[in-house]
Image (cartoon, rainbow, N blue to C red; front, top):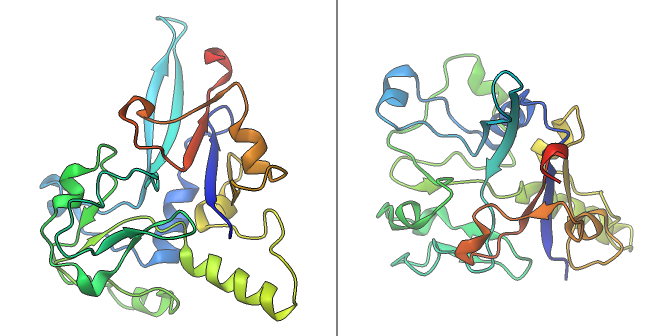
Length: 229
């Protein structure tokens, strides 16, 4: 059984946010508007954080995509009173939307701030509603939502490989963010396969986990930028 993981090379990321746009389109993530954003009610399954390196005047902007880390010891999972968030056998931190009662305990317990509460019934102005992905549910108001590593794409690839009576190939499954990255800064694959690109990059001397000192054991591995090696 595959154990999915992602590697993000900070040396390659240009901060273009193509991954953010692709994620919204693929997963029917609503835009809440300026007023709700001011109230802290924005929904972004993936965001690009900006930070600075060096001393003035030799300062350089760096960028870090941040999404659900799919932690093996996820702080969000044990606090859910209705078991709406759980860990799958393939290493995904999954959401069962029709179980969620909106306590927001999981969001409060997430140190990465990557879970979002849907305050209102999502709406898309015409004709944008015609562009919704039929493979992904539109989450109703009152539930938490977050990155799923595009689980619908994982399932589609598995079904296709089973139909051809073969195993999944390395790199065959690509979440929307990975597929859309023009700099090829993101990689996705089976972390349990020692020959996979994700597995090999994860053992690099540049590899680190975001807030790794918390012991959450994330499935997302970052590669340090060149100036930090």
